[in-house]
Amino acid sequence: MEHSPVGVVIATRNRSGRLAVTLRHLLALPERPEIVVVDNASTDDTRALLARDFPEVRVLALPANRGALARTEGVRALATPYVAFSDDDSWWAPGALARAARLFDGHPRLGLLAAHTLVGPEEEPDPLNKVLADSPLGPATDLPGTQVLGFLACAGVTRRTAYLDAGGFHPVLFFGGEETLLAYDLAALGWGVTHCPDVIAHHHPAPAPRTGRPAVQRRNELLTTWLRRPLPYALARTRALTAEARHDPHARSALRGTLARLPGALRARRPLPPHVERAARLLDEDTGGSP
Image (cartoon, rainbow, N blue to C red):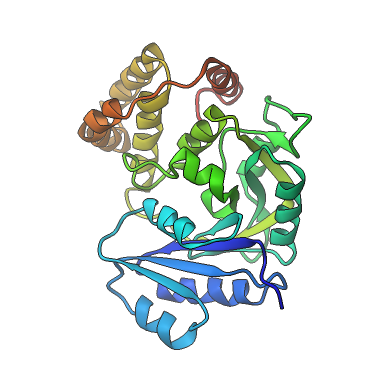
């Protein structure tokens, strides 16, 4: 049986139980995708579990936690023209990867598609679905779906060459809210980024958010503005976070994290081309400033 033209990359760390559930779902797909698990230096039984129970899965064992950059190692390891990302608590619906491959085959400018995400056993639509579907950027004649500048990593499928051309997920951000910057960089290179609701992903997150995640998300939103947006915009967002930090501990943590990483962001700063900046501003107006 032929394998799917869409490979799957999973970055994981210390979540062997959830990873096992995800792999069972992915291995049962009719598309039979090649799967690469990139282990971010787990200290639990992740590697033993993979060797014992999933010998058909390719494993890249990293010596240190590289956060979202681990996905890039997985993309490089695959030879498939298209790559779907799963987290260790998410998987793709039967037929979703085949549908994604057809969309990429039929639209040569498509660089990344954001799927429709169903959350938990109840399969509730993720709130991000509506945000993406209602994007004011609208459709393009040479792309499927609706143009966007954001996505959920565990529900994203990318053209391998486009992802590598854009440099993948950015090292300054490490992990958390890293998707917007990649969408910016793809669009800056001329690749289309769209929401295609007929491609379905399932996400079964842990019941409670991980400690510190809100602060990391806000830190990376601000760093993204320093990396790609105009300086007045970045300064205004920084002033707003500074004001919030006086009474909000998450904002204080986000501000400290931003200042620690700001020198690296300034060294890597590359403002968006005018047409992408215009699209980003339109989205800012539509969502009240949140990427």
